[in-house]
Figure 1 (cartoon, rainbow, N blue to C red):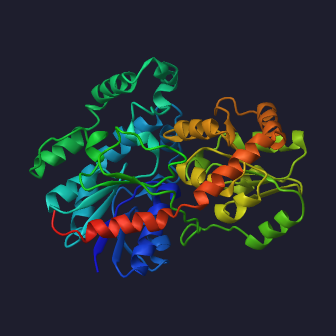
Figure 2 (figure 1 turned 120 degrees about the vertical axis):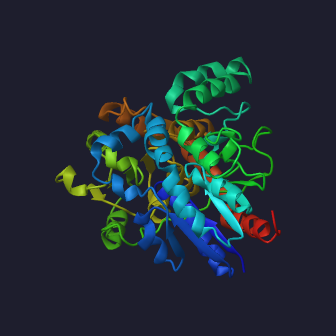
Figure 3 (figure 1 turned 180 degrees about the vertical axis):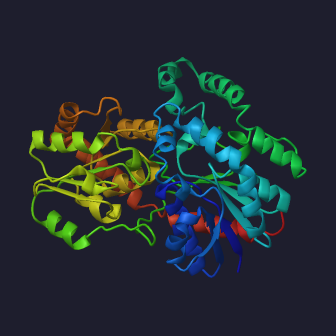
Length: 426
């Protein structure tokens, strides 16, 4: 039996693949420990998985509307997340994670959990980096659409030099952000190493890309020993969140008429929904279609007629296959479930990796995109009308779903993890 520590950070879309892996590792007889924000303790422990609290705790952001607005700023949200929230707390993250990893055989890191590689080096332990979205590879052969520099995608056709040049500029800007992490490395006796916000986050023992190669083809400049596993799915609401999804009510609504359009902003951007739901309601009225809306606080949207069901949560694996179209922000967890469901989608990227995820869906022909700024009822109605009536979107979505169904991301990931854990000393 191996002791394996999983250290994700972020929303449900970040937590869920790690929790699914932890559950499967436990089923195989290993000791899995999910080390993350305290707010997820009840959810993790309800699955019979060991939990360890590692700061920062996302729960502390609930109700901080001003800071949440910064974190979901369309252009600068990632900068605020890294510079103003995560990196200033790196010493706390390290102090919490270090004892959890004592005696562990393997650590599984996360792109936004920066203490992980430091702990692995100090403990001289094996570790694997886990990547949920292709954006973070910053490939020059498959350059991502970056939220802070959306204009740059128009330069990619000039050659493979564009992305490396952009990364050099970005690293100059990030030099001041990363000081708390560099100071921590110095304090614990480690060399400065590669930039920990870019190349330094990838493990020499291997990287698992937890998405389908049909979504993003592996590139020759990805980190060495990267394995693309396929998506890893999990979508139980869990304990401790006060989620009131009435599955009986939802089932009755789905059975009562034509397939609805589903509107969702995931588990994080939904707290900064702006006028997303109001414009969505107006768009459905223009088209005369039924809708399911997954809102953070449904009562804020007021009364609607019986063509619209508003609730705070529903398992995507059960809801999205019964949708006519899914409208969402493009978080990678939602992307995986929407592709698996095999239905067309309209992607409205809010920030972070979402613009790149949206562009990949557009290129696959499974959906269309509209910017956050342009999300207005009239435009949304036009986009939905095309998705509902142009059969090519449904056909391509169905074809991708069949390919994804042939993959077993959970098994592939766990096989690789166990193999690494059992490989012996670093």
